[in-house]
Image 1 (cartoon, helix red, strand yellow):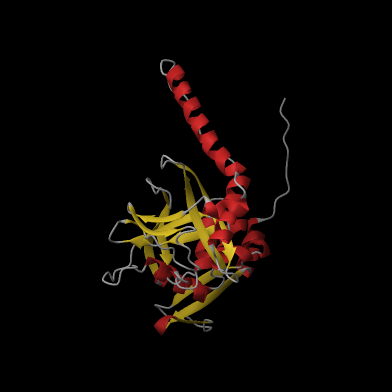
Image 2 (cartoon, one colour):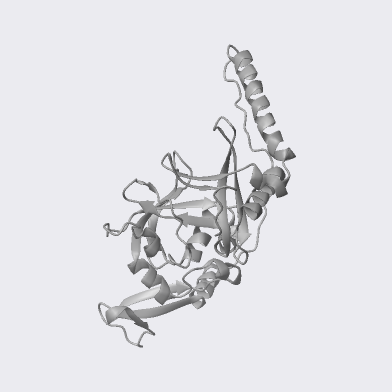
Length: 295
């Protein structure tokens, strides 16, 4: 035996009436001007409709009215947003966006796509280099590249066409914090010039950066950071024993290198360490006790 349940529903005509009440309409005239429609419409008139935005959605709407949204549509440029992580630089989205979108709007847009809208200010963008076909080595500052059009403009003067690629990264700090301080990302190498880990520190702009302050801050960051080493999982029973032995050897070497930094007194670190500026395999600057500089 089956039960038949009858649910009360809102009549369709009432739903349509309520929806019509939430709609606003403007007429488009010459030169992209919009105004309320006259009582009588003529053949060829262009009407633009908009449904009311709910209160909970208002904070996430970039273009809240007809005029701003139509301007968005007229300024669309192709853009492919990629994760700034070599070597794959995987594509997040390939779409069209308005070239006058602000840096913050782009941050919010990407943050929603990756599922973390609350921390949108941790999204930082990097321009595309037409020479290397890779991310440009200099980060585009928010105040210098405030719009999508500026971020797509080539950093090399002799190139004039807009790029279609933009790279993003999810940062340890917010962009606001990064741009208000001295920012240093560095890799840690052992005596065999093998990378161990990578770190990121911020230092206030109000004080001069000397070897003592810099290296003490770096060592404290190293000592407080959690290990991010990932050991490979054996894929076949045949190589399991050999791979396990190799991993143990590598782990022992890594542990001994890390113990050096763990035991190092941060206040004396400037006597033991040096900072090397390397680009494309060439050393451009050395910063240590014998080559002190004040930034």
